[in-house]
Length: 69
Image (cartoon, rainbow, N blue to C red):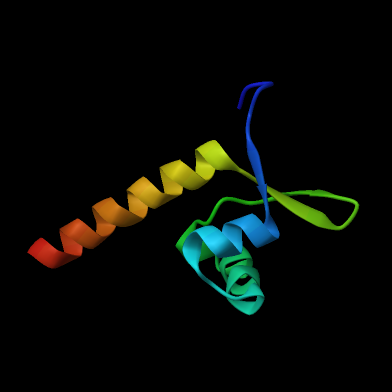
């Protein structure tokens, strides 16, 4: 992570993936999903954008592998 890392708050993450607050909380707790852990500042969750992109790519790769299996 660099000093110029972009961060998304919970509302932005929910909007990006079109999910509810409950779903985001579940993703945060589900270790098998390997969703990027947020940094918490004053009870606000901030997610590193670069790690979200990496996670998205890994999910797309896994979906392609499942589709061809």
